[in-house]
Length: 250
Image (cartoon, rainbow, N blue to C red; front, side, top):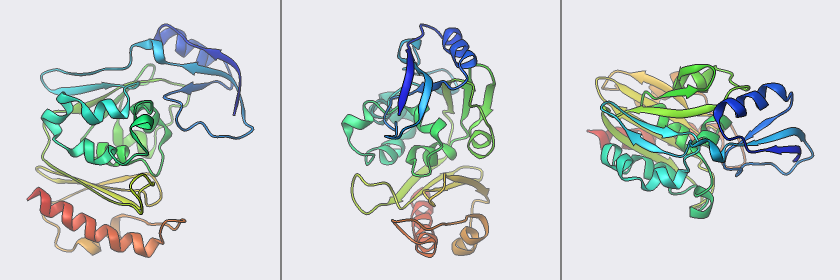
């Protein structure tokens, strides 16, 4: 991957202007998923100086800046206070601490990677995303539909109030990409997200009690094949992981 120019803007307005003026510009997050290919971009925009590395709370929500690293989220006291080890479980197996010290939440979300465990976890929390130009977008809508190629993610807003949480995953090795991920938020209803299918996580809301877990999964989720697992294996594993997650929330 090559860049003709490198820009390090000092504010969001400047960064957004570069993104609009340069036809083939690209935003750099933590730069962890830059692919080694021959593609050339006009300008690489580095967001390091924009003050988007923060985790703070108000009366109702937790706000996480888009440039906040995965390791900061994994270890932050505010996050642990309201969500326990939910985020830690979804982040601790991602490559290694050195990697998580530079990979950002904004890059993980905007990349919409199928293997992203963070997307699975965030999907069940009724989050919203705040973009510089497009404003507030529901997390579910962004993952499923929204196109914000020429915009900059500013922060993620997570409501403090949530139900009982559970995160489950299966992987072949500690730092390998997951075969399957499952997150559950049990409140007045069930928010259930399944990811690494191998497509990006999908969220389904259901009644508080599932009569038939296998039937629920087959009716609402689609699984695929890759080097790590077959579709049928993933579907069978999904039933097991979801059952364990539901039991954990009781």
